[in-house]
Image (cartoon, rainbow, N blue to C red; front, top):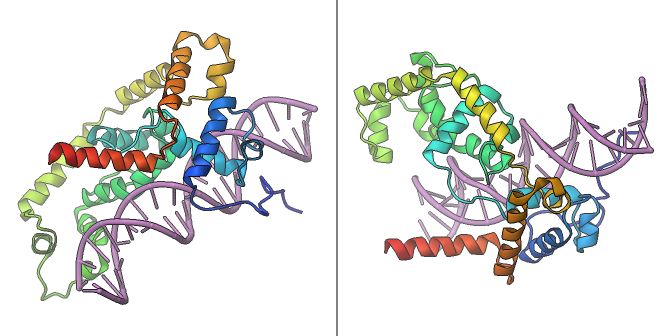
Length: 258
DNA sequence: AAGTTGTTCAACCGCCCCGCC
DNA sequence: CGGCGGGGCGGTTGAACAACT
């Protein structure tokens, strides 16, 4: 007999969370803290398993989450950290306040991986790939219909110009690739590791409501954090979902930029 | 306008680690 | 010391949306 599942899945809801469920979970956690994920759904009146609640809180509801695209600096930092730590997304994410491991992992898989391949760097080993392989990888990252070009068809750069409106001559491509290689080669792994060690020591991103409310040794800073959460709860009393916030953000963007 | 293909990301699954008994 | 249970983590999936034909 195998191990019992983490929770009884019969009658439990799965799939996307509704605004109402978000609201229930967030209210419960902010009022009671996190003692045991397994008991939270029952106490909060949710038909979800504890793991699902935990994931939703960590990846979406936490008040300290930072939303939106990662900056280029953050992206480069991720590449550097990945070179040192590998696929340890939680470790990597711990260096980015307000970012989740899931977010970093998704960002890596959908964007950075491709960018590295195009630039001739193996995303797994971070080693430079031989020029011949580079061109193969560039083709790999292209849509099927473009990568399988008959000999009479235009060459890759011409296709880039035609298909994507990118004006890159073969010389410019080489320069770009060389620049990226230089950047990678100049990476000072030792100083980076020191930096990582320093950051780890000074910053503890795994914020927990339970910790801040129950641990008297945490002191003034967590008290401030607790206060800010309280303020945040009050200001979002109507329980707007993050989607609604995002929509507002979009509209503000268009408003500002005409 | 409709169908197809590609991309993104929230959510799930299952394994592993660690603390408790 | 070993078993158990909970939490954490990384890999994977699939729905929703965007872009293209």
